[in-house]
Image 1: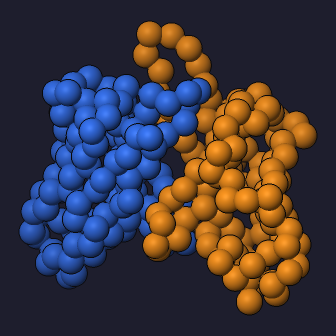
Image 2: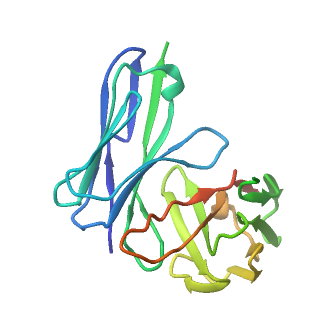
Length: 111
Length: 118
């Protein structure tokens, strides 16, 4: 069974601070996705990384896929209240296009 | 273009009643997923359809849960009889499975159905 563990589970920070969220597994994934979910809505894809060591930037968000494709990180620079939400990592490579989701990191950015 | 549509958005029912959740995937997508989300267990995959055929239902909790996909544009998740522990947010997601050297399994989620079983 493939499992993805996210840390921390909860994070409360002040506006302007930096933070890093981790997604770890003992399994290799063909791709790693990060989703953000806001209250009352479904998760929305932020980025997909497919190559070991790959780094992608999305404005103040930086995503990295581990060299061995077993882990990933999400770094947010100068967090803003609009970044508040649940961040989910998801690993691809299962049959068809099923994803394995991590438990999520609930982020709150206070103004 | 409309995204994934789910109905109802909220459902309150009493223990023992039948509950039916509905989903209309994005047009042209060939894969459909039903998930359940709770604070304790996070996002759990219940069942996965590809081309209207159930491929993996290992996440379906028990016989009280059933799912159907009679055509490419409609799916239902039924709970009969419902129990308080079924209270959760149920999401439907759709995706386009394509083959090739690289494919990305982006899933598009609906807004969810918030179910409360009293």
